[in-house]
Image (tube, rainbow, N blue to C red; front, side, top):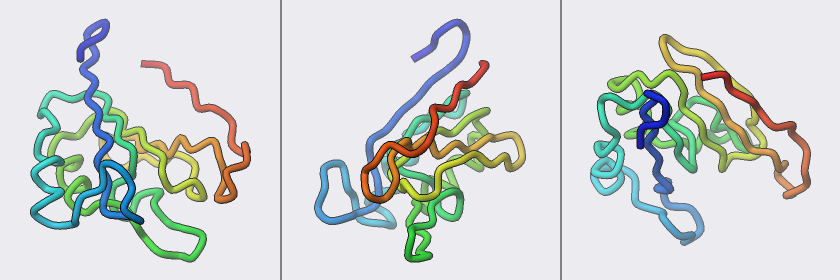
Length: 120
């Protein structure tokens, strides 16, 4: 979807977790969804994070998607916005992409974090 010249693309797909909706197995199964991200994407919105970026649980485990990370490195969107891992809220810029974990709830599903406003 393009709005005011900015190309957006989104996906609810995340690595398998507790048999929730839109979960897929890591590897080839989830890769076919990550590969759908268009090369001209400016703002990528996904439910979950890429592996190793704002994806650490309260138990210290990295839970992001490896295939998504590889696709983001290829596409290089200006922003990649996601949530899912409530306890790793914040933003981080690497290369041309600013990664934003916009989770407003904490691990106990209590409102904790303030909204993040972007200037596109």
